[in-house]
Length: 289
Image 1 (cartoon, one colour):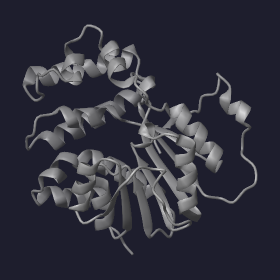
Image 2 (image 1 turned 90 degrees about the horizontal axis):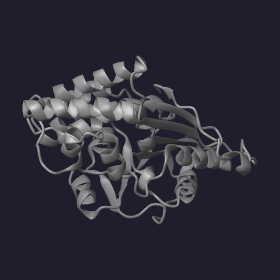
Image 3 (image 1 turned 180 degrees about the vertical axis):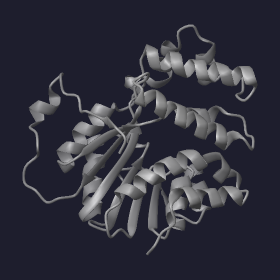
């Protein structure tokens, strides 16, 4: 089956005037390009864990894939279901799934919320056929330091000054107004989230062949913060380009994390548990996958 590229398919939905497509075209397209690049061949059935309001799920269904979505939040699960996606309002890994019934399992910015991570990934491996792949897109909140937050706060102040972001009491305007944006960031994020090192450690224990990489991520917050307007997708796209340029120039560190692993039958792990549990263990996430 010849499938339309992510950019053209999402732009067609944008042109159709659907509000939700207009709001998510850039971020969804960024994720969709990653997913399409790393899906196994052949690939028919996909399981997405943490589908949110279903933007990516709908895009993949439109491209001809058979997709099942798992979403813990009842309201957003219902929103995804209304898009024509098979959706279960359930917790992972509690949801029962038939063994070896999917070609790919996606954790789309959801794994940092799930506990226990090891069981979540083992259950995903069970769901995969031999040669199937798990694709993880997430972020390393702890990789944001003073340099990254100074840059991000500067961008947020620009949005406040131009009236394109609401100046309310939510955390992003508060970060923009603060003399210590890193403190605001930590207060928002340092609460029971899985680190990228933890996610990688368990993914490599379960699959043993994880390919890690980094990606842009700050632009996703911009999409949430911007007031609705026809220019919103263009602003988000420009911010994404700027963020990628800052990363490439080593001005800021990338926050996005991506991991790809294939289900290969094997009898031993690639590393011992003691290696993973070492305080010095830290995976290397090269930019771009």
